Image 1 (cartoon, rainbow, N blue to C red):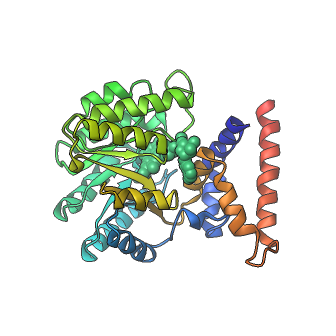
Image 2: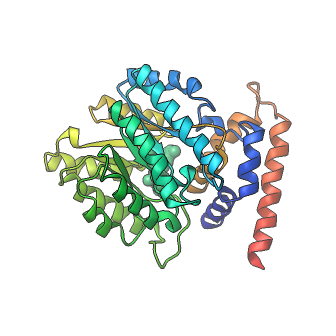
Image 3: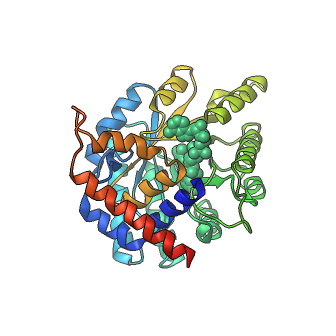
Length: 332
Ligand SMILES: Cc1cc2nc3c(=O)[nH]c(=O)nc-3n(C[C@H](O)[C@H](O)[C@H](O)COP(=O)(O)OP(=O)(O)OC[C@H]3O[C@@H](n4cnc5c(N)ncnc54)[C@H](O)[C@@H]3O)c2cc1C
């Protein structure tokens, strides 16, 4: 059942029709629990509050499935504007981008051009740019583009996913690059990726330990307290300096743990997505942890005096019907 619901939400996250139309719906299904705003000005207050608590942030102006040059250019302009706002407001915040948002599916040279413009401004402001890692079909092109960009700028890094067999080898080649380690959010087949939680977790721990003993900065991005505890033990045992790594989690997830780790003196960074393109991101979060629905159901289905609301029932019914339809289709 867990795998089934994971596959279902991943399928929804890749559905171009729903992604496109969700932009028009505004926030629905409780997405604002995990995506705090559609405009940069709406999230500046959120960042300031986290900064005051000692937490730095990485901002992701949401966007995927870009196949038109105008859309990629629009996304680039929004990122450039976001950089200006970070600089003017003096926020402790860097930026995460997806290359498909900046034209990777259109033309690689065009994507590089857009990235160079972003990196040029970020470099002037001394702001780091992280390239998020997408599904495996974009993996090799992302690493190629990173290599190209680093010929010009150093303030750029990327993400390594522990579910991929090849990650250990790639990490070896990225020794000098700032890297975020994650488990991996997409559905990959067993030709390229581990399929069980045990294997993916074991690999995550092994990759993180290797990085912690190296020289470049590493972001350990997980909500998994077992992994965090094991790595803290390793950090203490090996006297790993605090300025060599940080923990990262997504906005809206395990908020208490985010504050707790910060209070204990660890560098902490919260990943904050914003924008109208929230659907794919939100569905991947439901795929990772279907229990997230509980949080939303509580919030969305009931009024404060515990009465059922009508409109979310309609949206939930649509999801249930889509699920039934999708199951039938996948059985064929
Ligand atoms: C900052 C950040 C950036 C990311 N960037 C990328 C990227 O660029 N590319 C990519 O493919 N993926 C990315 N991801 C997603 C990542 O790959 C995983 O899909 C996602 O983080 C879920 O895995 P996990 O390690 O958090 O723990 P999971 O495997 O989801 O959970 C492990 C255990 O942790 C506990 N747990 C987890 N969540 C909660 C919760 N909310 N409340 C209570 N307990 C909980 C539970 O005990 C659970 O069994 C990113 C994740 C983060 C945090």
